Image (cartoon, rainbow, N blue to C red; front, side):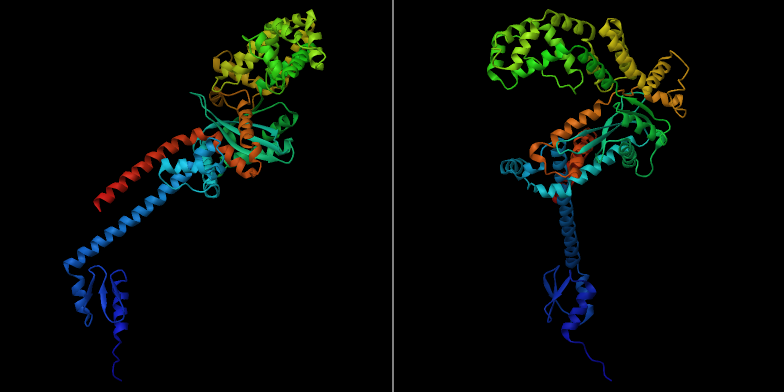
Length: 523
């Protein structure tokens, strides 16, 4: 049977399949070279291979490949720059507590687009694609820094405006040559605030920090308040973390001493409370105060849960007793019950004497609390502040003074971890070589003690994280899911660790832009 000659269109299509659609094209009748933009004779195959070997075609092919490389490179750079910009914008807004919804505001968008000379992504794009990335990168940076270091952990809980029990977990590194770094590791909603939920949260947080395996022996210190469920949780946790010492916050303990002082002086407490009511939302009375006493500040408004603020207020009233009395006596006692009560209290001579007693014997306590709140204190400095407070509290042996001394003794007696910390401090100072076997864990070695040089003895860092939490959960941001709140607060509280990463990122992206310019010029 004779051989059937293939049709012209089939033959041309076979050549295209063989040499590539990026080189040839056909309309079914002729073969067209895309590189040289000419018709190629296609009756015989050798004429096609001859065309492919010509210098013009070879040079054209090289130029075409260079153009394709340029376009691909530019597309890569464009995508990389866009993704990096979007991520950096997300990080900047989260770390500065700027709601992502601000990207919907036309003036803000126009400002960014005008001066950035680029299109600004939608809020939903940032929220869906970049918030979790910033959160994951933050955790990765924390893990990288903490990896092989000894650490301390602090947990506290609060009730937010939505009625949820929210607990924050702070971790910090223990370093023997400088103060360590502190990070907010986790924020979680608890069903209840009890020892069981705190124990689970502690272990879950360590799993976040060390996802490939918890390093139990690296946890040397646990800080919390003195709530019974926290103490019970610490005992439960120590079964797995055998080197861990539990210290209840010393600043909180000193605040409990301040509360005992307040309870022993009810008339001072009544005066502070009633004068606060007199000037609350009363602009005319505030104006009267400023006209009579322009040289002094308005009476403080202490918050009982804020450490030391009541004693600071008592100091103020002692210093400005006669000015306050003069202002209050100018007011009409029939206008407000608090005015009459304040006038009656200010008329008592023993009240002024009580204020002098409190300021003389306990007026330094708020200063001690404030000094303990400072970050980066050495263990020696922290304990010396506590020793200083003990000295002036134990100095007064009056009836009220002894009641306050009993409270101090009870607070410190319950804090076994603080006894262990004091023993470690004495060993580091060379004052003793004997370890307190009753308070220091058996597995806690003398080498571990070297990492306690800058160990904290307060839980102020976790208290600060709650202040940031409240700022994020503002009245106009109640629709945020807790998962997003957690991501926002972790990024915001730890922005310092990612700042160096983003500086490098900016340098890297500027290098890419420069490299892209070189390619453009060469091509």
